[in-house]
Length: 88
Image 1 (spheres, rainbow, N blue to C red):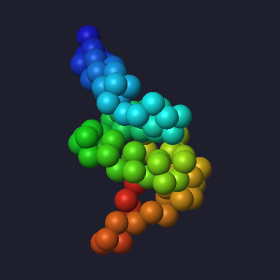
Image 2 (cartoon, rainbow, N blue to C red):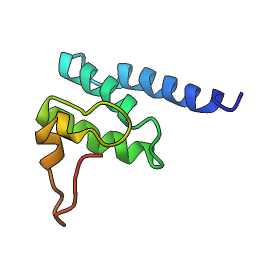
Image 3 (cartoon, rainbow, N blue to C red):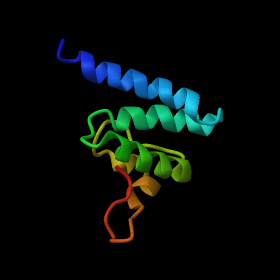
């Protein structure tokens, strides 16, 4: 029962991304990968935004919900204007 809300939230996010993004292979790939990556994020919309930007530019998203950035050096090395990691 306690997993019902996060599951419904993730499902609605996936459905929303299917209907709101252009139907390109990259958008589908990034939407699915970022949904998994951001599934435990405190601020889901911000995580999805930056993950999507990074995924489009790098063509990869690290596995899991945190860490594993060694799997995608481009994603790992992106920095914001303050020098902090850009990608979640």
